[in-house]
Amino acid sequence: MVETNLECRLQVGQICFRLVFTSPSHARFFNKYYQGFISNQEPDITIHVKVIGKGESTPLPNSIIMSKTVEGDSFNFHSGLITGTLDRENHTCKIEVKEALFKRIRIFEHFLFQTYYTLIATNPAGESNFLAHACSVQRNGAGYLFTGPPESGKSTIAGISAPMATVLGDEIAIVKKEDSHYFVGATPFRGDFRESVNMQAPLKAVFLIVHGKENEIRKISKIEFVTRFVREVIYPGTLLSTERKEDFTRMIQFCTDLSENVPFYELRFLPDQRFWSEIDKLSLKNNMEE
Image (tube, rainbow, N blue to C red; front, side, top):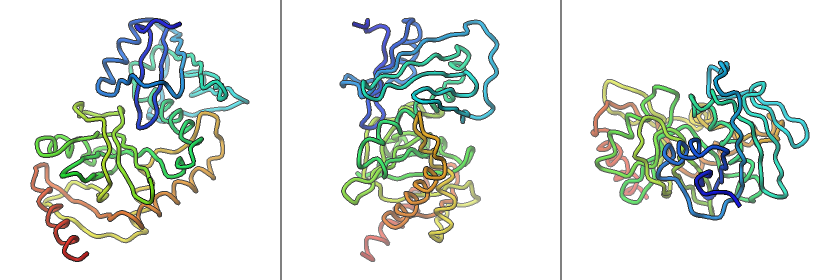
C-alpha cells in the first residue's frame, strides 16, 4: 500500500499514469506542475520513480529528445539519465532518474511520451493516435489545431484565443481518429500558457502557422502539408521499441490520412484576435459550398 502523498495520478487522454515517488516533495511538485490533469481514475500503468544523483552536476541534452538503448525489458535514456524496466504483464515500470533532470521537466516528458505510446500500442485504435507539437483550441464546439516549429507562435495563439475560446493546450496535443472522425485532445504537457482545459473536440481544421505582416489563410498542397506536419508529430516510439523505419512509416501514413479527412491550410497571422475573423470567413465559405 503506497501513501497517497507519494503519488501523482496524471491523465493523458484516455491513459492514467500513476507515478509513485520515494519523496513527498517530488510528488507535491508533480501534482502542482500538472494541476488540472490530476486524475482519480484507476491507473493504466504504475511507474515507480527513484531519484538518484542528488547534488550531482549532470549534463543534460541540448534538446528535449533523448537518445535511448534497449536490452530485453530494460531501457536507458541518454546514457543513464533515466534507466528502468518495463513489466508489461503487470502494467508496472521502475525507473531511476537523475535529480538534475527535474530542472528541465520537458526532457522528462519525453519519457512520458514514450510511455503513452507504449500503452496505446495495445489498443487497435492506437495506430491512429499521435501526439503533436501544436496549440489546440475548441471554439463553438469545434476543435482547431495550430502547429509549427518552435517560435512559430503556438503560445501566442493560445493567449490571444483564451478570451473567446477554450484553449486545450499550447504545446502538445493528442490527435486521434475514432469511427472515421478526427478529434483533438488536451495533454498536461504545456508551454507558456498554463490555463489549458482537459477536454477533446471534433477536429475541424489544421493550420500550419507562420508569423506574417497580415492575417492570411492560404490553401496548400497535400504534399506540402504532409511534409511540414510530419515534422511536428512526436515520434511514436514505445519504451522498448527500436524499429524506427516502421515508426516513421506510421507517421507518414497518419499525416496522409489526416490530410484526406480534415481541411488544412497555412495561416499567416498578426498577434491579435483578428485572425479568427479570417477563420470564421473560411468556415462560412466552406459551409456554403457543402
